[in-house]
Length: 468
Figure 1 (tube, rainbow, N blue to C red):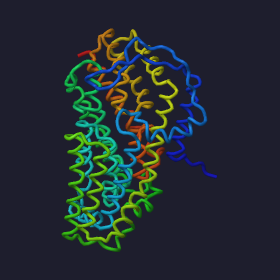
Figure 2: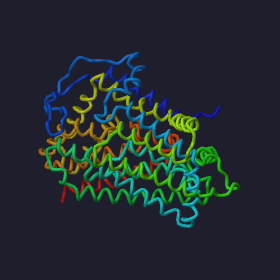
Figure 3: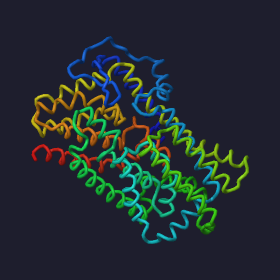
Figure 4: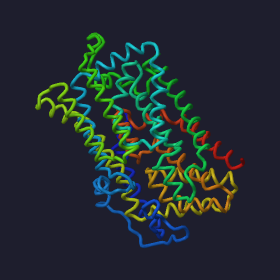
């Protein structure tokens, strides 16, 4: 019997159990916290860590963690229930748009226009997603784009993993090289007590270098797949992915006609995403507003196509049903942090990290800091949550080692962004892979060489910055 790698659900439940076991052995502890008016949040006070009564997590805590993960705002951002609802509404919206035939017709028209030049879609789209990442920390919002990008990549004779990489690496590298991202750079800089513009040139250099590296990596992989589909990491899923993402349309059927109605629906489709980006970046929208936007958009598309009430509701429900597994993954992933916080071991891990960097040289300090923040990112995937938790403690340590605090902020966001490209506790990773039908272990296999390259690039930039 062939052994199979466990599903995302099993991996996440195993991590919940592992963290719960750790609460029985890792000492419980807490920092004192004070209100930071600029951040509007409670932040830990350096030097105030103390051991407190242990709160080991048992059987009932473990089975309740995935449920609590939906409701507890453990990331300092949206609750998982808000993100899951957004995903379901997006699924319904895509179900309605797909039913109109506009996406199939649009893909066929795009492939005809780009014949022979399809590979240039990769850097263009990765640049667009990277812009979203570096400007406003594009994360959960990227989940809306998988059903749009992946069919285009498959129709261009690439594979589903190429589509996932374009979105996840594009937005992820943008966040890794954040320049003005309020959820990473700005919050971390405020918590560290430095202007967020300090270090912006260094971060821009990391952004451009890492983005170019990822573009070359993805384009090389995509071209290999196009030349020989059996070289795809998800080659065994090719037929089922084509049936799923292209809705069973075969080449023998010929390209569908592209009508004016299709064009109008695709314009509405694009406007919906543009409004979402504007709402998040400019007007402070979050999950509730975005969910409402796509609900209204689905209704408008239904009217334009003049589909009946019964067909509209069934299409919407079917689309939401397709993404139900993604919604469940998001809640389960948040359950890991729920266990850590309930067991009072999050601050203990931070205290250990504080002691690990004391007394090091400048280069050793910043690279050790990068490594420690990478490890902490596995446990706290939220960039803003990790910033609030670590920067008030870690940034002042740089003063004793002669390392500028802005460089520690850069190390923080680079570490968080790098780890969150593969982090199983990050709902955006697990949700995106579920949407793309890419098993987690296949994504790790694809990412392993790239992660090593990106790590070397980041450490080189950080080391060079300490001596300039």
